[in-house]
View 1 (tube, rainbow, N blue to C red):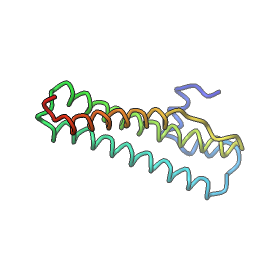
View 2: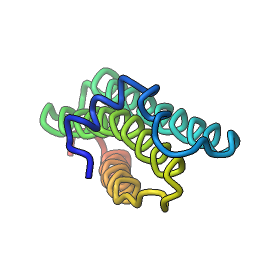
View 3: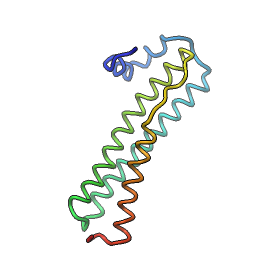
View 4: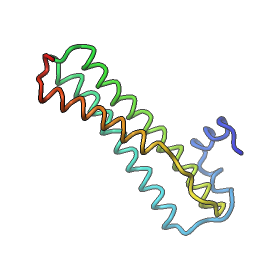
Length: 130
């Protein structure tokens, strides 16, 4: 079992990941990298959405605006961190011939985005003034 600190070190030393196991078919490594980039695009979109809520909805009550913006910003940060962690975990699993790691993160992110979207629907339907 890899410790948290060892896992963090692997984020910044991808060469060490290559030292484990056997080299998988390059198509799988490239697919893993494309998935990583998709998670980063998602993170950037969430961060952009957080800034948009904060900057372009000034008439919203402060607590609602900041709450929605922070939810999106935090989701973006977590998504970016998760992208790196998942890339490393998947690459190691492929090199070792193990099953790919399971994660609850996509479900949690989906629920968070749905809650923010539902709040935005309520704001649009009932107005910004509440």
